[in-house]
Length: 299
Image: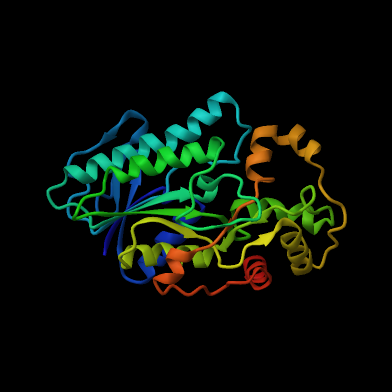
């Protein structure tokens, strides 16, 4: 396949490019600078709405993983605007470009997030569940609506609703490792909130699956066995051979990271299941948290 990827230099994008190239696909990266290798790069500037006409002509697929880090900074008004614009404006530009090609890509796999569901408590959530409340749910609704504009009879659009991606090299797990290694890791508050997760290797395999199989609309990219925060904490402590006795109080996190970010990212309960993915025949290499953390940390 000939695949164009936005967000190719990120944590997930880097792993996806490596996987696609290893299986023989031709990957072209969308980059925000002048290019010298037009065989493997396309210049674009989504913040200015710039993408050369016909630049996506003849591609089999487009993958969009671009977006400001959700937890990279406190959620000030300016940062929240960056989070929204980096997803919605970028996706809108790609969707418009796809529809303008005389021979458009057959699929757009667009980044998304399980933040769509909001706080679900103990309820099991799947692709048929309604959208929830809060900033993240609103971001995802706008994000997916922008991507859906690329949908045509000749182009299917899949929303990769991603949970917490586990890998020691990046993402949330990388940030957790040091305090847990020092024996300072603990559950967040009561620890009863549900966490939906997936290893980086299974996540990349699932993205490739979306390229290769006729799935469209929302697809939850999470492992089939979500865990509570207390269960996750015990499993991580066990994998690192460290105690996990002291809970982390919510007030301290509010002070450090800000109330809204903490409440929506760390204390929201999301018991999400990958029903669309498993119904299509996808099999997880790491469906259980213990093995998933073991391989993610010690690979």
